[in-house]
Image (tube, rainbow, N blue to C red; front, side, top):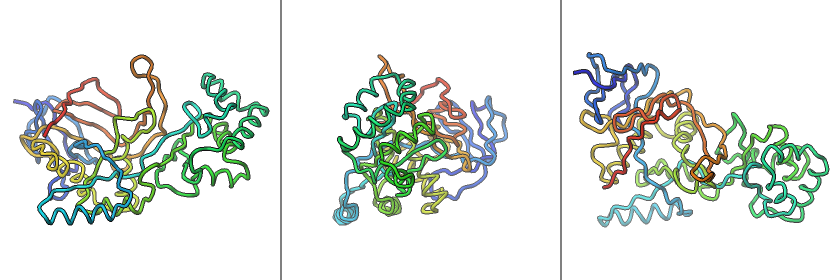
Length: 347
């Protein structure tokens, strides 16, 4: 009998200690039926040549609180020697609040900025072309200081969505480079990019070298951060994308196999989930097909698309050809298919 789906010619990373290898993955119903050379034609065929084929991530929310990371790790390691089983978690980047003209700005409580926020977004953008409005906003920002450290607020733009905490990309640095105040720089950036700019303030994990140190430590578990909560303030769902693009591809801190195993097999074992987190026959078919060269993040957007018009931040990404959940194709080409076969896994 033909399998429901056969993914062919991909680089299979099964989340075990095995090295990446070329092969096929067959799925029937909810489960993987074969890995290697699949001879029989499937009902649905996908050519994954040039792409990775990996388990889908096993989601575990990260607390991210330990700022003194070395002391926390040392404590966990000492307790583990006494037969404890402690695994601190980290994310792959900072976790922080997003600001934008279509949502909230660092000066949202100042009168002129609060008045601007009451207008529909197209009117806000148009108002910034008025010199008197700009002058009022800049003056108001001078008398009502931002509550955040402007050295730690970074600018995200289309094609430049970077979470590396580069001081040259802070709002303050943008302002200094153009000899203007931070508020004036925010206005200028919005005018220049037609409102397509977002400010990112990392409240936690500000030190990227400390993040890298935690990611390399075998005691520390890889968390996915708050990928499905606080959606009106943050958008952490692209943390795995950043880990692959920045820490693996750009910095070379981890191998692809280590990274996939840390998200999938190791996390599933930690949670006691035995039939997920790896590619093997009889395992539940949670599979990603990933274009290594195409991995990138898009600019976060603010949308009112929840029930009753509730709002959220949404951030798309590229580089994902296919995501299979419980044997059903959930995402294809970065777009949902309408099949929601996911279930809550309980240890």
